[in-house]
Image (tube, rainbow, N blue to C red):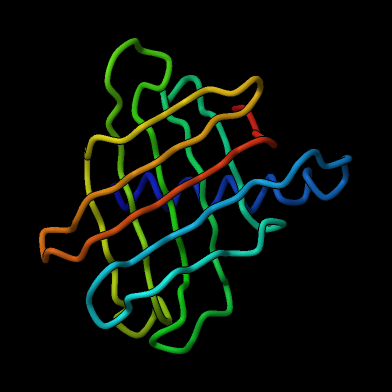
Length: 152
């Protein structure tokens, strides 16, 4: 799973240059709510920096954001939500990763692997919603609204 998230961020970084060169549609939105624990709160990365992508060959649909300058231990550094097999019929499952702090200095990372989530296609975009908890019982809600989607 960490490889997948890192791949999403690498692809997102490369595609950011391409995105900057074209006309943007409505912004992508990513919202994280951490219900309990030391980092409880609502986090909304800048919409201009949220990347959504569909990797058809890998059978993944993802929304991600990364702050490459996160150094404070309580600063949100990255968020990723991935849908496995988005084109298959039936219930959806996916991965969630939320990291705080400098990645070089033992960041706090919340992950949930292959959890049930909601994936709804809306025209050329989609909405992804996850509500659940980590193994450490940190309750999470992640919502992504993708309208500008890169396809690979």
